[in-house]
Length: 209
Ligand code: URA
Image 1: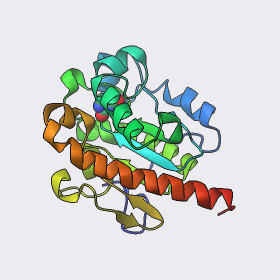
Image 2: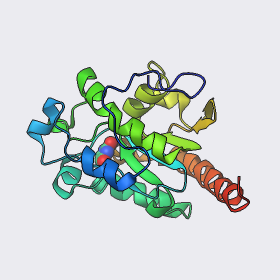
Image 3: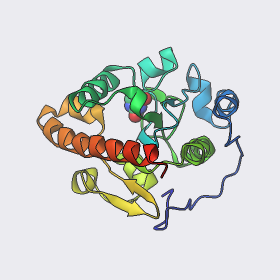
């Protein structure tokens, strides 16, 4: 798991990326060939969105459409995520969206341990640069990797989990919602909480906090 209870990273960064210049970070991340995932995909899919809003949505890894287009969450699951965001009056530009691994795993399998470990330096640099107040792990892979290795997403979703100064709100992965449409109502509840948090962060930042 990436974060300890104080909100610090538990994993030693093996590679270092620029943490003060997003464009430079992206340029270097796009060149990564540290694990075998890069051999089977079209390219590294970097996160995207607003790096100043201090809210991050984090998924598992790019799917086929994301791999083809080089952008996160633009396939069917991403389109559903956009609809959920819109239903609570949020847009992609109100947050930053990324994945735990940046290259598509073959047949969308769950990434292997060495793939997480090779890729995590990019995610850590994104997190250090954005300095999020809120992180939303989407789905069990992201929630288990980031905050809690054993808990099921069904049990922890919709609950704020504080680690140091970061508030985590795990929620279902939109791909899961495509297969289990009855669960969409829970996701909508979670995103209403995220919208509230986004408004609060905006208020605090306009008062200089
Ligand atoms: N699923 C993910 O976890 N990430 C994407 O970018 C697309 C689908």
